[in-house]
Image 1 (tube, chains in turn purple, cyan):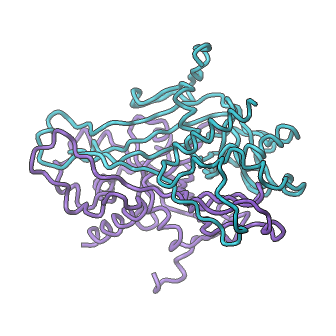
Image 2 (cartoon, chains in turn blue, purple; image 1 turned 60 degrees about the vertical axis):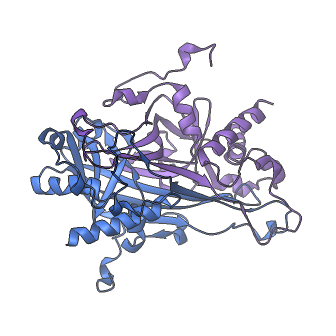
Image 3 (cartoon, helix red, strand yellow; image 1 turned 135 degrees about the vertical axis):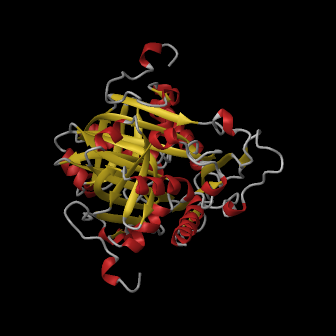
Length: 243
Length: 243
């Protein structure tokens, strides 16, 4: 994005302005996108008759556009038919920070909040591309080895799309920050790292003999960080989509 | 809770009623509490002037009461001064489910959504207990080895409390569910497990020699699931609180 420096930051408004601990915040796409792309799950907040709901779901990103998934029957998606304001948030926990005072206990984390108006994706070409992405963005190349979707499956799968209008990221990635006077105290202080990893793929008992784990998913290796695997999937998917 | 069987389930209303995949849902405290207690982070949805916000924060639970943390300056908490409806959601990702059709791809997960009216905790005794719990619930026994909180720290730490009025849980924990006709297809199918684990504690360089990792945090062992560690912390904390 070096040739478009003006476009790397989202605009700042009262909605996404970071109110506290400003040094942890950013409005830059180069910070926000990797936080979104490294996660499988997000949480979407929306409002029905003044009541907020916070729903976990899977999401994916194409440029400034976010997509997420739901069934045609779900509460949120019926509401979204007319377009509705939402806030989609992704968070990663990276460490527990134990300081020498209760007040300075903290966590290492990365989070991104994205604001926009959500719509059901109904335009046939966009929906077909989204239903391919819902699989291939996570498992690049996977749809090519599956049977095609059936008409009633396409109908039953609802995809929500949202242009990111405003967004912000916050992150903490460092050691203990204690008050100057507390550094001499004889209390243990430090960071306990937290990592989300994938295990060895467990093949279904009924897969015919001779069917091996797909070569195009070779980056799903036991013990790897889920973050890294999903970032690699996103990058492979973007390269496939360009071709 | 065996002596209070009638009290194990939350009431069902249009707000928390599970609309789809009912077999994955529950309203029971015995299902919902462990999902909440196994997580360090939650997401809280709230509304300001019709705009939803979805904020990640740490939470903890005492009986049917949820608490979470924020700074006095934050947007959410200013709003909450008058009491506001919120939805607090906790989600755990346990596995990626690769089926023989795009449509049957899924995830193993556990999530809980809790509804109620959030208030700032201002009553001095409740606030003092909450500020102890914000550390001891995660690290039972920790506050006893730290210096006491200072007056301006108490003032700057805002705690939000909410009685859970309604709640529901959803979970999926199984192998691939494919259409009958698809089981013969020569595609790889299975589950890729996802686990969140803690690493070896990293002591701060400036801790005086001779200060060892606290014995009361011995359950924070490298390689353990964060879920299990936090459930153990909760149980230790509840036992301490009873004494």
